[in-house]
Structures are given as C-alpha cells and as structure tokens.
Image 1 (cartoon, rainbow over the protein chains, first blue to last red):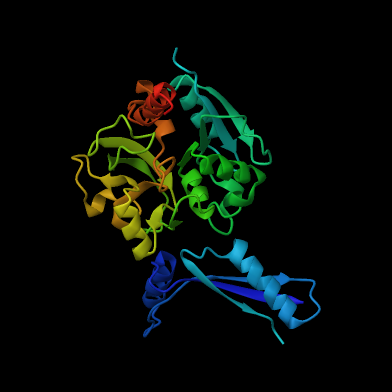
Image 2 (cartoon, rainbow over the protein chains, first blue to last red; image 1 turned 135 degrees about the vertical axis):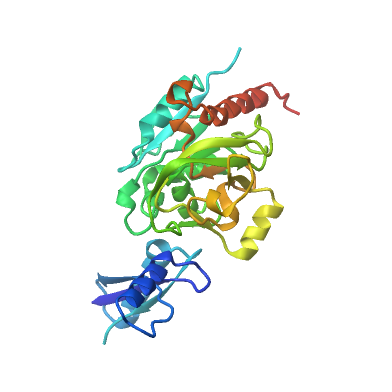
Length: 80
Length: 241
C-alpha cells in the first residue's frame, strides 16, 4: 500500500526557502501571492493489510526519521 | 605527568573535516587521536569525542538526520550521558541536535546561500571544557563554511537555555559587539554554539580545527583545544571527595 507523509515547517518557524519562492513568484508576475511555505512529501510503499496499519507505519516513520519535531510538523495520508 | 588525551574522531560517510580534526587533536592537544567509523560501536575509551564537519549522508532529508541513527551514535550518546566530553563541529553540531544531545535545530541559512568566510564569535560562558581557559567576552576569529547554520529553538526552550547558561558562543563583529551584519546565517539571538545542561556536550558552527596553527594565519581555534587539555588536567588533579 501507499502512504503519504507530508512534512511542513511549524508555524512560527522561519522558512527562508518559502520566502525566496514567494519573492520569485512575485517577480514572475503572479500577483496576490501571500505566504509560501516549502515542505516535503514522501510517498512510501509499505507492506500493510489495511489503511490503518499503513497510516500507523507512516506515523512511526514520521516520528523517528522523516520529521524533526523541533521545527516541523507532519500529516499522514493513505489514499483511498 | 601530563596525561595524553585520547581523542576519538567519528567518521561518517560524507564527513570531510575528519582529518583536520585528527590533525588538530594530534598537534594542538598532543593527543592520541584515532578515527572511529560510523558503523563501529567501540569508541575506545576516549577522553574526548569529536563529531567533525562535512556532509554526512549527503545532507539528505535534513543535515544530520541520517547520521544520528548510525550505530556509533548509540555509543556517543552513552558516553555523553556519563559526562564524557563531546565536541560537534558544523555538521557535528547538526548531528548532536538531531540526536537530541543538544536542544534546538539548525535550519537553512536565512540568506539561502552557503557561507564560507572568517567571522568572529564571542565566548559567552566558561563552564564548558572547551571554554574553561578563555575569557568570557573574548572574541575569536574563526572560519565558517555551512549552508544550514541558522540555529533555532522554541522560545520557551531558549529562555531556559539562557537561564541555564547554555549559550557558549555568539556571532559578533571584530570589536566583540553583537551586530546584525556580524551574523552569517540569521541564527536566533546570534547563537553560534551551545552546550547541554551539564556543559559536557558542545556544538558550534565555526571550525576551530581549521585555524589551530599560526601557519594558517590565525590560531584562535587552538584556544578551544588547549582549553580542553587544561580542563582534563584539572579533572585529573582534582582530588576525589
């Protein structure tokens, strides 16, 4: 099964990459661009019998390796 | 007799300052220094463990995120837990933060650029083995070379760190004063180096091993290693109560 883990900088944490991207979008003429935050998306194939098990596996991986709880938060999604 | 310090320099895949650290330990500290591979669990009874700079595991995912799970890190954690002296330089600092041996995290430089130049840091505390013989307020000229040196901690945690005297170095200008342009990476409160609560684990972004000999034009980095030598001597001669 596929599980998606989305990792984003916590609110309040500076995100220089997101800011640079927002500035670049403005220079390219995309008006009305507000705050941009840059994160990471992981698509992971796991051996799991059901969506709950896959979600739990994704959660554990996010907790141990994929995110740093000091500066990042994560969401786990198992596509239907 | 002066004890000869035993130093373990940890070699991760992608470390690139390991031999500089080894050389600094040997020439400045007069140490019996050796490299310990990332996949070894045997540090060899050292007095000091150095996690050197570089790009362990290609800086993939986050700087230091992979290295913290290398087998050797369990031994480093145990050594630090028993009060052993650990110095993390640049990538070594990032690894210590990822491993939870130091608080906070190192983010991408605020200017988004890799910064490679000489800067000044001010000694903020004498309570670590690496700053014991330095003067509080003393400015040292040090090289930095990093893309992810933007230190941050949650505001409440940072307040605690300040209260516990865990800020070891701050970026300053050559007069030793804090100034916006003196901070090369946007780190919170100009932090360049910190220690754990006990003070035995220290991480810093600048590279003292790269300017430890007058031959290199600047030997300020040697002060950090010499301080450690003195602290070791002090420990060896302190009577056990």
